[in-house]
Length: 221
Ligand SMILES: [Fe+2]
Image (cartoon, rainbow, N blue to C red; front, top):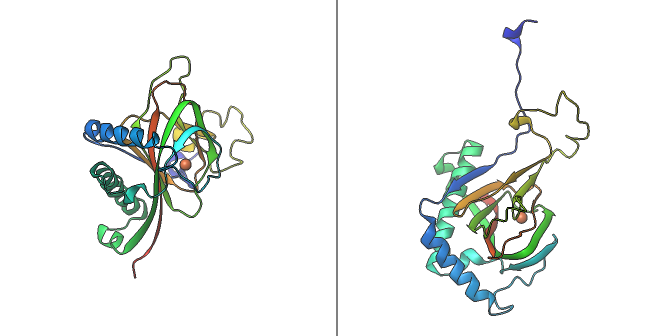
């Protein structure tokens, strides 16, 4: 075989983005204090719109979180949006000047997940990019190594319908099935909103705390 003329490459790739806050401790502690205090006030700060996915043992806030005036919320918003625009620019080969011609519409909320809590597989229609920021991953449980892990599902639904020795050991870039990400405190993940994902049952005592958001874009008028 003439190997010099042979090529192997990937198509239909799914863009994923992660970043770590440089100094997350004080920000995360302020968020923990705020969210924990709010939960004690019953439904006042809770989402009242309903959700499409199955959520168990989770307190979900209203979806206007990034509009709240608290300094810790605005600091988190700035961190998330800065990286979102970088991700949009990088994945579309846009300049930051081109990004400034776009307008973003955002829904944002937080989750407090208690022992045994989970979210079933879902995606986020009517948005281009979604994000998750890990405020506090909670307690590790050695009996449940996948406790609270964020798991993304292969969007090529039939890709793993046949497995044999010729495809079971694919390189990561060709991987089929699901990919799991145990997130650290201060870590941000961005992913296309079409991508199905779930959170495995959380088996720790201290609440697992995340902030999530969806973003849709249009050209600025
Ligand atoms: Fe989600």
